[in-house]
Length: 405
Image (tube, rainbow, N blue to C red):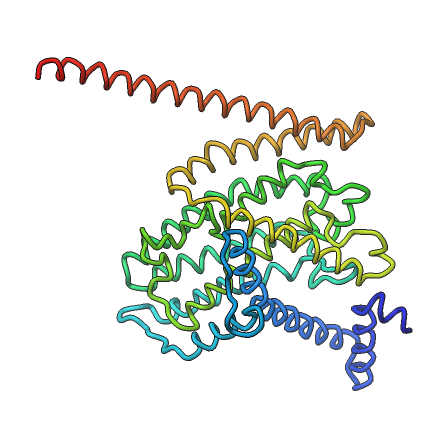
């Protein structure tokens, strides 16, 4: 029993609780329902509490990347700085502007947080440890993630502030735009696994992860997840120099803090989704024998992707709104369509003709990458030539004027 409890604590705890509840007279169905409810509450609580660590770790890591100290006053190494921030937010008065739609105004931050936490309901954390095994798990991730966009629009619309409304419009324009290539590349692991069930997708990544089969799809999903979270270089949802504070301008105290929590937790959640879809999820040596190892593997992969998003945030400057939208519609969306089409064709050919699946898909990705780079190079040359012609034309026009004077 000792080894079983250590190797598979999730199953051991579930069995003990099931025995306890049935011993109290509950049926198997009611006991399972109670356990599901308790598991959901525990998972949501752990995620929200982990935000304290995520915020502190992100501040320290970004500070080191930018040659700063970061939090170093409140508690050892500044670990209680986030707690101090929470106490400050709780102590502040919640100021409700005149003319707001109160129900929508206060519902918006709840929806934004719920959209992030709700995604974890279908993510397999370890062998046999999953909130709900939906056959349309990938579709569920997209649908629940879209609730956050609705919450942002509701926040700007209900605030009775034109700057908040404009910020919400721009935020939704960004989020909806980058959701198009994200949904397209989400179909790639679905095609490779033959299922939308996230647990099946994890199981099918043996012996090779999907990042090896479809590296371009993984890269596009990473970029779009950064844009969906509004992180640098896509942090235009709250561009203070242009929008005051964006869609949440009129929020204060804990209501504003909930948007803050959703942003930091979303980065970690995006890492978990990438780890599940492209990095094998909980798969690893000994994971099926000892599920606790599967959880460790899953957490390690998630943290690696989370750190990568931090790395991009701390080193890449913000781009303009027109550059961001042009990059999505002129580069990412056509590239996502090309990746989806070539993956479907290459995988079908490999399975039908008995070819090497890895080499076939890698070859298709390489062809798409080379064609994309060639197209971008030709576009850059054309732009430079156009700018040079305009510059020379301006000099020729200005030359007679200077001689006249």
